[in-house]
Amino acid sequence: MVDIRAWGLRFPPTRRLYEEDAYLREADATLLGYASEKGRRYYLVLSQTIFHPRAGGQGSDTGTVEWEGGLLKVEKALLVGGVVVHYGRLLSGGVPGEGARVRMAIDWEARYRTMRLHTAGHILDYAVSRVYGAPVETLDAYHSPPEAYVVYAAGPPSATEVEAIERVANEVVAADLPVRVTYVRREELGRALLNAPNLSRLPDAEVYRVVAIEGVNAMPCTGTHVRRTGEVGEIMIRGVESVGGGFRLVYDVG
Ligand SMILES: [Zn+2]
Image (cartoon, rainbow, N blue to C red; front, side):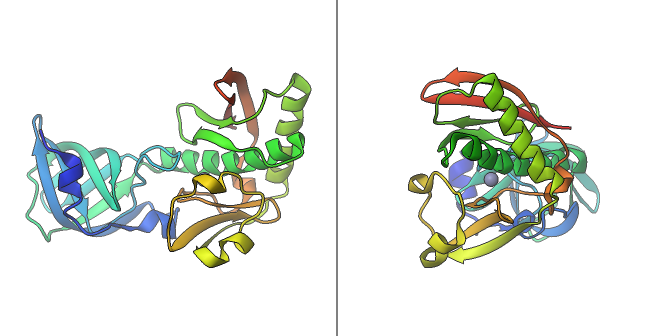
């Protein structure tokens, strides 16, 4: 059994191509190292990646890493410090030595759905704030299949308020607003954000990645988003349940 945290931290931070271009489905990388587990399972660290790990309220991508004479099915990607560790099963061949060129491909259909769900989650933050009359803090969120949700720190909405939240959210979708990613220095952050809750829980960093939906909100986020709100499709609230300290809003995109 490998201590994957200790092992992963030996590598330099992974360049995260998905933060630069969420629409990248395939890309090359250099193999920096691997560790093996029983049952032909391996952990791989690459020089750069298109695999979003499970982190920041978003699930892990799946896909493949291929090289001359071998193929690994990536079942999940983990974030260890700044290093993305790819875990999966070797389907053919053997793992090459350090420095080998590999070709990555993500399961695009699942990723694109996650992109639409993640942008929908930001839109719902805005819609909830609009209906409640002030930004509502979020306690937890998961923007990937099988069940996307956000936990808001407020009393649960009435049936009429749920309808209003859904209506406001779908107005943002219909407006087909641009979604932009910018990088903002800590000193500039106050001016760059819009309708952003949870600032007290923000990790300390020199530079923040900010995802802005024009005129709606601009929030620190490391996730993958669609380019325009129209790509999200219809936002549907599937359920609302009270949880400790707030309510959990389960949603989906059509
Ligand atoms: Zn986000």
